[in-house]
Length: 216
Image (cartoon, rainbow, N blue to C red):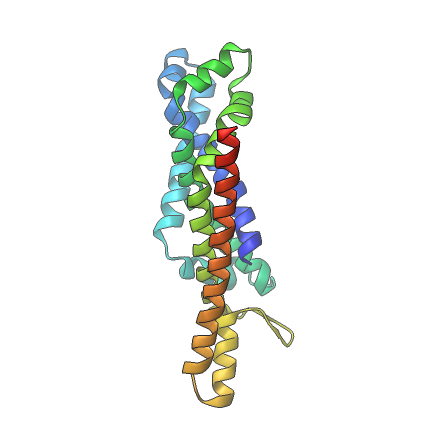
C-alpha cells in the first residue's frame, strides 16, 4: 500500500507542482502577453490549490472512509487504500516539489529558453532534475509518514481471504487470542521502527550519492 500510494502521490504531486510553480513563476509575463493560455493556467492553478487545500485539510481517515463506503464500495480493500493514501499524499508531494522548483534560480529558466528550449522542455531537462535533488529528504519524510499512516487501514478491513496485510489488524487479531495487548503492540511497534529506520538509511544513501555527483 505504501509503495504504490507513494508512486501515485508522486505522479499527482508532480503534475500539481508543475501547474502551481508555472503559474507562480510566469504569472506576470503571461498576464502581459494575454491570450487563452493565461486563463487556462489560472483555472488549473485554482483547481490545484483547491485540491491541495481539501486533501491537506480533511483527515486521511475520513478520506479513506469516503472512498471505502461511498465512492469505491464494490472494490477490494487494497486498491481503495492505495487510491485514498495516494491522492492524499499527492497534495503534500505537490507542495514539496513546488518548494523545490521555486528554490531554483529564475536564471535557469531563462538560460533554457535562450538555448531554444520550450518552457516544458526547460522544466523537464533543467528545472526538475535540480528540484528532485533538493526535495529528496522531504520525499523521504513523506514516505515514512505514509508507512505510519497506513496503520489505520484496518479501520476499513484490509484483509483478502485469510491473509492479513496490516500490522495493526494483525495485532488486534493476536490480542483476541491471547488477551494481552501489550506484547503484540510492542512487537508491531518494533516492526514499524525497523521499517522506518531502513527507509531512513536508504534516504541517506541517496543523499550521499547526489552529494558525490555534485563534487564531481
